[in-house]
Amino acid sequence: MPEPIVSGLADRVVIVTGAAGGIGREVVALLHEAGARVLAVDVAQEPLDALLAELGAPEGRHVAVAGDLKDLAWHAALVERARDELGGPHALVHAAAVLRRRDSIDDITEDDWDAQVDTNLKATFFLNRTVAQALIAGGEGGRIVNFTSQGWQSGGFGGSVVYAATKGGVVSMSRGLARALAPHGITVNTVAPGAADTAMMRGGQTDEQLADFVKMIPLGRMAQPREVAASVLFLVSDHAAYITGATLNVSGGQLMY
Ligand SMILES: NC(=O)c1ccc[n+]([C@@H]2O[C@H](COP(=O)([O-])OP(=O)(O)OC[C@H]3O[C@@H](n4cnc5c(N)ncnc54)[C@H](O)[C@@H]3O)[C@@H](O)[C@H]2O)c1
Image (cartoon, rainbow, N blue to C red):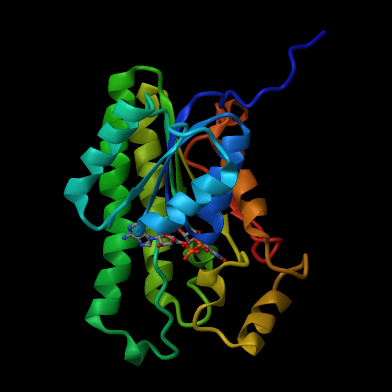
């Protein structure tokens, strides 16, 4: 008989950022169901604590940590908490990001630029590097999954030019990191949602604008956040061992590549 298919995630330690967000919380839930241990990171403690309570995991099985990922000096402390309280880490799923929609490019301020670039791009590089250093020290390889968006290729809809630029950067950077980290057995991939039904997707858009977006999607609906999380689970599982530098298009056919 062939071996049963397993995810290889039992007792693996995964750092998940944006863990209180629409997609991030489903990533945490699926990892929990797959037997992994999670260091859940987001800006506020209370929603993270509520999420872990909902999962019903035994005390100490997962850890919730609140803070701002724009504070680059904090990243090392996150990795240390994962190592000291859970073991590992073995993987990073980096879902934290911000989107500031501006109807006209003339309305985009320097603060809009900085907030999105610092969170979505700059923090991604430094967090990836800090986690990669720990994965290399662990000597067992590892997995990094970053979040891009359909905007990386389309240039963005709904007043999201700067956001799209950061997400294009995430794709290029993840490809470079995939090449740099491959000799250490670390894979680096990106997930590119089209429209997933979360606060980020709905924020700053009227129902009519949202409906126009959905018209571009052959499957005719937004993704449920859990459907996006499932693609993340695949990329951190044993099934994706030979995939690196890839961008997984999870857009319901809105884009086809
Ligand atoms: N929802 C969509 O349709 C969609 C489409 C394309 C890409 N994405 C990407 O998917 C990922 C998850 O998006 P989502 O829809 O769940 O968004 P969301 O807004 O629901 O969740 C994002 C989370 O990131 C956290 N976060 C933001 N800045 C942070 C910081 N500086 N430090 C720590 N945490 C921070 C927020 O508090 C929030 O909980 C993002 O990277 C987003 O760009 C989403």
